[in-house]
Amino acid sequence: MENNTEHVHCLIIGSGPAGYTAAIYAARANLKPVLYQGIQPGGQLTITTEVENYPGYPEGVQGPEMMIDFEKQAARMGADIRYGMATKVDFMEPPFKVWIDEEKLITADSVIISTGASAKWLGLESEQRLNGYGVSACAVCDGFFFKGKEVAIVGAGDTAAEEALYLSKLCSTVHMLVRRDQMRASKIMQDRVFKTENIKVYWNTSTQEVLGEKKVEAVRIMNHETNTTADIPVSAFFVAIGHKPNSDIFKGWLEMDDAGYLLTTPGTSKTIIEGVFAAGDVQDKIYRQAVTAAGSGCMAALDAERYLAMKGI
Ligand code: NDP
Image (cartoon, rainbow, N blue to C red):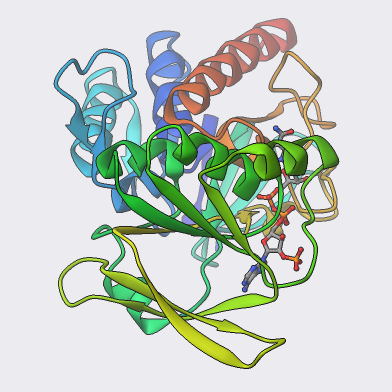
């Protein structure tokens, strides 16, 4: 076990825009960051197609390519980027203990958590097959590609309402599929949805299948009251049934809300444990954008730098 233990000054867990940005800042501040990429190197952006809303890419960029750029920049600054997944932590006292792949033990003077979140999916085979070909879990990322087209969105929370409203400004009709006879979204968001003429709400409706060979062509729905099915021709199918923050291993150590989002002191990346910081989607259920995640990764590195300086380590 002894040989499999390593001490690092600044450990970064996760490799989306938050983690890589934290790595760039921490490396430039000479914190010698070690970053473990996790199960999906590059994070959620690696499963999107074109990104057009990240400043600095005037022609747009493919999500996976952008994350390679982030990684290269962090590596060039001197960050030590490694494959591996944090599987257990012990934050009792510094140095903090983090196990990688259940075998290697890292002890760290400071830890930046940027493990992200994962979109929830319905679990249909057709949904996975057409992912990136009209199926998307991010209206803000992909809605633009369906300008003037009919689209469907499943979900009835604030995210679904917000994304349906966003899509209604771009698309000709938004078919909103709600599985119960009411929505979970806040009243104000529901009112906005109901007042928007080109959003058509389908109550008591579930999605049976996304139809299309190479791209989305229609969605097959089922009404539970009438027990009838129907096919709605659409060019895109957006899934907005919630996200799951990747925070399971921090349970019992850090404060989180009911959904598992890590809580940080507002305006900072500080968690309840001094020396442990959180950035990106694992602590943000509202904005969830690459650029906001990157910004919070920068905050976490600056917070870590100040913490380490204050402690004199
Ligand atoms: P929520 O968990 O609030 O809502 C998920 C929605 O998806 C529910 O309506 C749920 O239906 C539906 N759903 C879940 N599984 C399925 C399924 N298999 N088939 C069909 N529908 C399904 O997630 P959100 O992402 O909407 O919101 C997360 C949190 O973030 C909330 O607290 C929300 O208020 C907050 N938020 C706030 C915003 C703001 O203030 N501007 C913007 C976005 C989010 P059912 O209701 O039947 O369970």
